[in-house]
Length: 321
Image 1 (tube, one colour):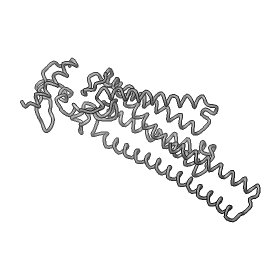
Image 2: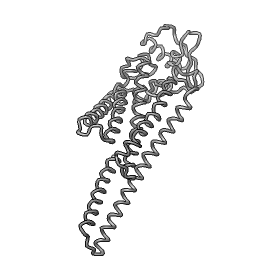
Image 3: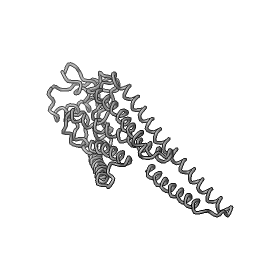
Image 4: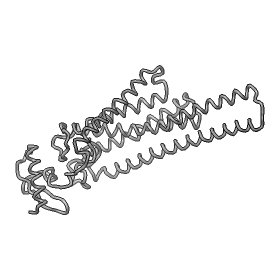
């Protein structure tokens, strides 16, 4: 037995002893192609065999206690901040009568959901996880699945509503649609599309048993268990053959679509505001150059145009931020 094999065998036995495995048999590891497999003659389980695989002992920041403290702190701050936005909206004079308030209210709810999942950190992870996280793991497979779904659904819905806000600003600024028309024709479609683009993906990940711990995140998220498995014979949880292709395609498609919507809508809005600024400056310069005298009606129209443009610039800054 080589020195490396002896080292990983000792680690596996120590982990089994600390976790009080149901099988107290010694784990016999045999070296394979770059990893270690359980010897069937010992009567060990697949999970016991994976304890012999050096790839589960990842030296990443996410498994440290510092990562645990940081994610709990930032997740809590994010959840409280989003809850304050909800509180301010509900306490305002117009409450949910504004389209902007309704979109922000919806986005903040899902942000709270994702932030709470992050703040819980390693607590919902199964007690018998094969990864050596420094944080406490007090949960089960069910609690890990609930945390992963909350994070996945909440974060993707937040991104979807961010796109919805961009579309709202584009309709209001570039196409000069009134709020009454947007709330009747555009807003229902935005809410529906946010759910239709996000919920099927989260259900697909759930059906594929992909809400699991991973050493590359400090909370349960969408990954095979263990993270390095590429087929069903290797995984403890995760139906790779049946679902992984669809999940990857769905993720890439949604990411590309959301990125395109955000960039395209912002470019359209910025270009429109820039063109309006140029036209107003040309009009003012033309008046000064020709020495034309403005009547009261023309002066009022120019003043109103500048006021509208100033309001549009304020909306542009809000949209970009």
